[in-house]
Length: 199
Length: 199
DNA sequence: ACCTGCCCAGAACGATCGTTCTTAGAACGC
DNA sequence: GCGTTCTAAGAACGATCGTTCTGGGCAGGT
Image (tube, rainbow over all chains, first blue to last red; front, side):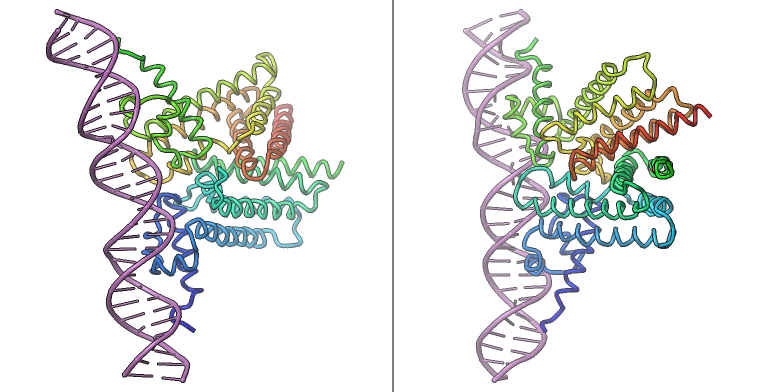
């Protein structure tokens, strides 16, 4: 094998990208800054990720995977498997509250990336748009899965998902209290779905 | 008075800024493109708006004003004054659905601007961040006002606001169906608040 | 020891963008 | 008419950014 392995270089690059891109925004961070923070040469960076869009998409993919894993882990800890959909979905809001309360919270990284790069049809931007869409779809599907007890898991899961997105967008601009309001709304929506189930 | 009036130049600049910034993103549109579309010289542009951040903030302010006016008008049309809070708040979702169904919808312009410029503490960016915060606050306060019939108008309004934000963010990425789900959630939340009122 | 291939650090390039400057022209007060 | 002040059109400047290139060095195979 050759010198420092590619896997470590990759993970250091992704870690640096996450730190910098999320905190300062994507287009405000140059490739040199990623290189400096990761301690990886530019040549290697471009060998592993042939363009900035590739790096951004890779960062979003790995970050989304960790985010969803953290969410699932939090749900399993607060409301393990035998618990009902209601308890498990409400537990998801505990993870959301933690995310929003984290100092340096700047809204949903995927929505931010979408806003910066996702809009127009420029071909290379599709890489990023696809990564965002993938994460949102997987997150929504996970919530739909949590809602399996209800007669309409898809509807319930999608409504909970909208609350999660709304809480992140709102609390980024207007403060963390939105997380609590979103949880209250979720409890109401789930109570109504419970009522529908008994009816 | 001097030659072509400043007011027309201003409005043409703001119109051009709205068209270009919303469709292609802020940092993807240069000042020359705004100048070309508005038919106003660069010198004049910089006399009216001393920096790009000033122009962006002005665009957001005037666009937000029109957006909120359109929302209020839609509510007054669908559920005029004697109608109750429930009908008026649900009417707001009709305006939201129109916005989301508009071809070329790319999410909330304010969230997008926040993602591009709002995050870090750079001084000139505060202009934009302040404009975003102002719009979101006014929108939320308007919804709280619509909820006046409920015992907790603030809580109800904030929850409806979160649903609106979530619907925009979600439907930008995953499709317009989120608007309907958000309306369903709103109906549920309002029904619960109605129940609380009767209790 | 000598290639061969990969690596790093950093310079360099080309493009773009925000902003300012230059040049020239047109409208006004006197 | 003359200066003044505003304007439009665009060149120019300085900075930044994504990307590529160059030079020099270290590791292995034979």
